[in-house]
Image (cartoon, rainbow, N blue to C red; front, side, top):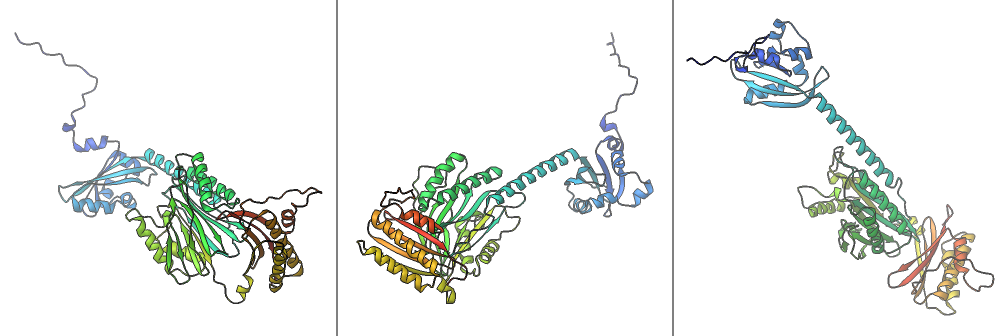
Length: 513
């Protein structure tokens, strides 16, 4: 018995034939993407589908057959088509905006029959391109915000001490790089001393810049305590951990005292200070160095490096010397060679060092550089910078000896009578305070610059004086109050070895000396 034949379904419309049964043109006409077929070295058009015509407009068939598609030329596709014809391999051009205002990714595939042609397949990626552009715009805004924040937190104008010439530069990373936390600062401590700091918060973006701002503010506050560099870093270390335990920072804090002719510094994981002396020899001050700020559990120590007249020192961040394909020491050695030949003002030296390191607007890391010079003063200028010192043994004769010494020195420096008398009074009061509350050895030091007179007394006791109100019946306690009243500024600090220094300064009238 013959098997029953299955009943065939009925439809109002004929079934869609299999893809293999369709003519190629019918398949391409149904594709929603833009499709064009070009042939020959002149890229003459052989076919475009309906989607292509809808996007770029229709032209008469005869015109299309004679000419290449001008929109492909406008898109810069012809060189790619040439490559496909020569190599016989497909090529892709990503996210190119077409004349219709939309973005397409073009895939060009070789067709080997006949004279050789290329099938151009354009997928509409407008939504993806616009989303990517919005993301890039957002990243640009974030970076601009971070750069603005970074620059606003850096000193807008460097303090210029009497005895140093200083310049700095900051170069943010390229447009594709999130801004970092590089910073620098110059802080005049009084008494002729200057603090210099440079640091780098590890990390990028607004958060790194914000942490940098907090550390810089803290450095300025701690600097006012006039502590040794390693004690400043100890305080910063604890603060950095409190600000953000996940972000650490490197830092160098240094203090210059013109009377000592040295730069005393402490480093928390930062790069070594470089110093070029007056003969052109470069010294690398690379010890001692402790771990970065925020790691905790480390006792930092201070070191020193000579910085006499004619010397130039450079403090910098790793963006100046670190390269992905080189050891860090190679970059530092290159900077040493550049510094050995870099002469001129601090700003000129800054610019030359940045150029020699190949730092451009597209550099992949932030760069901060701080250059300080201790100028060698000669001729009439040298008369404006003088020092005089007297060792005091104590006893009843110390006070009159100090007054006589101050009188003679200030007279020889040809100060106006009023400033002369105020200087002698301040020296007498500081010496009297040291005789009463300090211990030997004691020393009186006078210093003049082109801008101020500085009087300092050191002794062997580390108890720091403070200004207080003396009661009518008190026989002492008025010396520091008198000094604070007559001087432009005054202060005190502990000195190495367990002693202290108490100082005051007077601003010189213009044209004095």
